[in-house]
Structure formats: structure tokens, C-alpha cells
View 1 (cartoon, protein in one colour):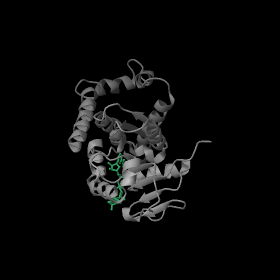
View 2 (view 1 turned 45 degrees about the horizontal axis):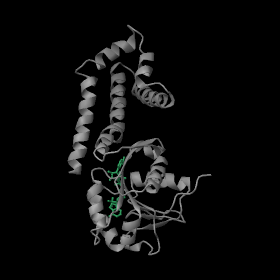
View 3 (view 1 turned 180 degrees about the vertical axis):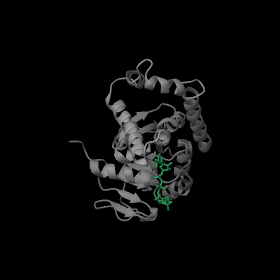
View 4 (view 1 turned 30 degrees about the vertical axis):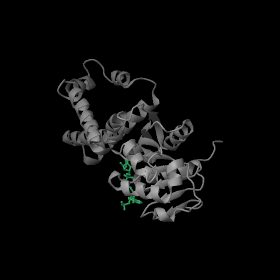
Length: 275
Ligand SMILES: NC(=O)c1ccc[n+]([C@@H]2O[C@H](COP(=O)([O-])OP(=O)(O)OC[C@H]3O[C@@H](n4cnc5c(N)ncnc54)[C@H](OP(=O)(O)O)[C@@H]3O)[C@@H](O)[C@H]2O)c1
């Protein structure tokens, strides 16, 4: 049996924070504190507070998960550092917030102790985390211990797969591939559905064909040891229907340029938001 997760402080319990919390509780979570202005009570033994000042004085989390929108984060982190410098000094801070660098988070958490070295991990999860099928890229800043790194990996593994990148800038690439990636796949489903309707299929038939094709292909890819390219080749008979479609998609001006351009635009935007 795996050991329960240690006490956590979750700041922001919306879509992402809520999905993480549900998974952690399901995995066995030591009594923890959730801070969110809208959240009603999380079942005992956990505590919900609407203000940081209401965190019990004797509560010491091993990790603080920052899951508010980035634009709301600075005052929260500064207040936490002022009210609970002990937490800021001892816990590992896991930010799932897009765009805020480890340096800027550390700057907010130092509070009145400019020599403090807060431990910061940046995590970029994606929406399939809400069904335990997520993909999270993580980066640890230099002051994170091995033990803290293992804990962060456990926390994000509760909602899917994890991968660590060695450079903070690579979090922008993670954002562009797996963070934003579900939207690219949903767009493919939308376009397939429209194309199916364009071929004269009813709306219901078009919808189920598009959805099940995308989800079934994704599940097959997930279960297969083969590369995506090999799976593609297996459905592509020379001179057949799939080959006719792929000749269009693979024309140099189509997917081979559109996908890298789209991903580069996302990575560029992630960098802009972080600066
Ligand atoms: N959803 C995703 O797929 C995803 C993926 C990767 C990363 N993220 C990151 O996860 C973070 C949260 O995103 P989300 O989609 O979960 O947002 P969300 O659903 O809006 O959740 C944020 C929650 O935090 C609350 N909050 C805001 N300021 C607060 C404060 N000062 N004190 C306490 N609670 C506060 C919000 O309440 P209010 O409504 O009052 O502000 C809201 O309930 C973002 O930084 C985002 O970049 C999200």
C-alpha cells in the first residue's frame, strides 16, 4: 500500500485545483487545507478557508499548490509570505500557473526575508487531468530537494503522466505541446464533424464518427508500443482512401508547416506572458 500524501495547502480550487484535489483525496491525503473564495467545505479531515489569515496556526503543509489565475497570484503569495513565513521557508511551492517564472514566484515568497531561498516547482498540466488522463511537464528550480521533487511527481502523477524538463524555458514548449495540445485535437474533431456533415451525413452521425475516431485513435496510440508514424502507415494502403487524404494533409503548405507554426506561436505567446 502506498503511503498517504502529506498535508498540502491548495490555493485556488477551480477547474485545475479541483481536479487535483479530487485525485489526491482519492489517493489518500493527510489532513490538508484548501483556500478558495468560492469553495464550500471539503469533507473532513480537510479544512476549507476563504482567507489565508484563517489557516490554522499549527498547520504546516509539505507542499503549497498555487492554482489561481496568474494575474491574481502576486498578492496571494505576498500575503502568505507575510502571514506565514514559516510555510514560505519550509514547503515546496508547486505552481501550475502559466506564465509566472520561478524567479518571480520566489521574489513574492521571500517577503521580509530577502536571503530566503523558497523551493519552487513549475508544473504545466492539461485538461485531461480532470479524468486522470493528463500530461504534466515539470521543472524544478535549484533549491528543490530530491525529496520535494519526488513529492511533486507523486502529486501530479495522481492525474496522469509526468515528465521533467531540465530548463525552465522548456516549460514554454511543454505549454505549446501538451498544455495547449488538447485544443488542437478538439479542433480536429470539430473539423472532422463539419466535413462529415458536408458529405451528407446527419448531425448525430457526423458527431459520433468524429468523436469516436479522435478518442479511439488516441486510446490506440496510448496502448500501442508502436510509433504514431507506424500506426499511421498501418491504415494507409498504397493508392487507397487514407493515402488520398494524407496526400492533401501532408502537402508542404498544409500540416507539415501549419503544425510547427501553430506550436511555435503558442511557445512564443507563453514566453511573452512570462516576461
Ligand atoms: N484549467 C486548465 O486546463 C489549466 C491547465 C494548466 C494550467 N492551469 C493553470 O491553473 C491555474 C488555475 O486555472 P483554473 O482553470 O483552475 O482557474 P479557475 O477555475 O478560475 O480557478 C481558480 C480559482 O481560484 C480562486 N481564486 C482566485 N484568487 C483567489 C484568491 N486570492 N484567494 C483564493 N482563491 C482565489 C478563483 O476564484 P475567483 O473566481 O474569485 O477568482 C477560482 O475559484 C491558472 O493559473 C492556469 O494557468 C490551468
